[in-house]
Picture 1 (cartoon, helix red, strand yellow):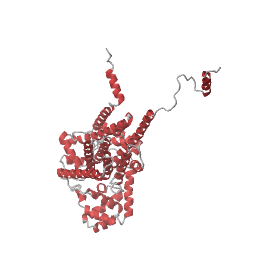
Picture 2 (cartoon, one colour; picture 1 turned 90 degrees about the vertical axis):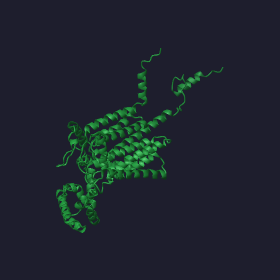
Picture 3 (cartoon, rainbow, N blue to C red; picture 1 turned 45 degrees about the vertical axis):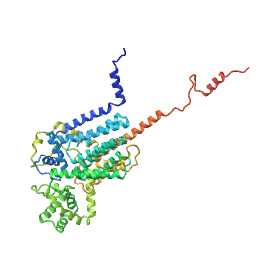
Picture 4 (spheres, one colour; picture 1 turned 60 degrees about the vertical axis):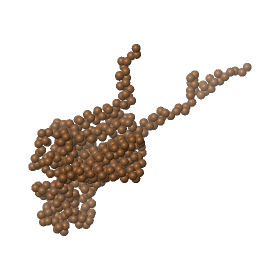
Amino acid sequence: MPRTTGRPATTLRSTWQSGTLWPWCLAAIAVCCGYAVATVFHPGYLSSDSSDQLRQTLGIQPVTDWHPPVMVLLWRVLIHTTGAISAMAALQAAVLWGSLWVLARLMWKKTGSRGLSLAVLAVGLAPHVMNFTGVVWKDVHMAYALLAALAIALTARDLPASRTKTRWALLFLGVLFLAYAVLVRKNGFPAVIPVFVLLVFAIWPTPGRRRWLAATGILVAVTAVASIGVSAATSPVATRQYSQIPLDDIVHVLTPAQVRDAAEVAGASADFRDRLVKTTATCQKRKVAADAYFQCYPRDPSRGVTELGSQADVLVRMWMNEMPKHWKGYGEYRLQVFAKLLFQGNLQFQNGTDIEPGIRQPAQLANAPINEPLKSALQNYVTGFARDTPVLFQGWFWLALALVLTLRRWTGRYARELRLLGASSVLYMLAYLPTAPQSNYRYIYWPALAGTIALLLIAATFMERRRTAASAAAEEPDTRPAVPQNHRTTDPEATTAETREDLPVSG
């Protein structure tokens, strides 16, 4: 009887060598890493903004549009489903690692490189990406939604042309993520446009006018319907948050005397005029570069974030009247703030949970404390890299990389994706030129994530090119002359002599 002892081992070895099991190994690694990261951040790190949204989610205070109501609604659904406030941070980790697994699987499929596919998963452990994975921020939500849309686009690109229904389904799924990115970050729309173009080109390599109109209509319709639905479900209080921008410009460009005169011309009340003058004097005395509303403005705690919004019309009139006359000072101020964002970024690590003084901490948060040893380990990991490799956390580096991605003529499979990822990052960062309130690293989180993925796509392009060249060389026929089996030497003279000896001798 034939031996069967080694068949399972042989089958397993051949399956491993063929690569059939590798995507499942990547999935197992992604699940383990995602669970570990979610454990480190449990129950989720919160800034003062995040804590404010949690109180809105739990019904402790009214919902406002100062922060995206769509996050409040999503958090409510998660808490109602799971009963835990940590579900939001866990969902963030799941979306990140799920998207990375899809990209890693595609990378393995195209390049056959286990190392490169593992490098894609390693993006989730990179210090400039992992630092915010469990921080409940709209910036993180927008970045992961765009990453998920990218993963969907590259998946659709490899589908056979006959899979029409699947392509439409992936388009709709990608549009859902893009619509969420628009709703969750007010200034995220410029970053969404190139990713949307990338999605459409991935689904249809040569889309006609009808398909462009259909895809655009779906994106607009889904965004509009979702916005209306969120507003109906949360009934947010309007705060007109955009009033922060003209306030910053006015108090940093004009003198206190000019602010007083401009406020009188714009029809400001005596109380608001005095507050503006005091804000200007305080910011200039303390040399506060931005975020005047929270740093310098004498706020009325009883009115909350609606206080400034009630004066939005006055601030806009002041801005329209004064900034054209002080265009040079306005340009210098905005360039100063943007340069600080690019070269002096801060907040590379959100240290646990921040609760504003005098604000009652929700019981659900008090009953789920942060693991201090794990937080300390994560903080040492991130801040150590921020000290030794600061370029990873600098806006100028990711902007420069994005410009190279956008302007360079790329070739290969991912040429279009590289240009569009670069364009998404460039547009998103330039949108902060007239609006940046601070110099936080979270404002460049998406460009950093997109740039890291783009570098791996470049590596995949070179790897695939080498693989194609090696395959072509292996299949190329050997055109060299065959060597006789009885050939004993390669010396031409010896060969000639041997040939003469073999010739018959005439009589």
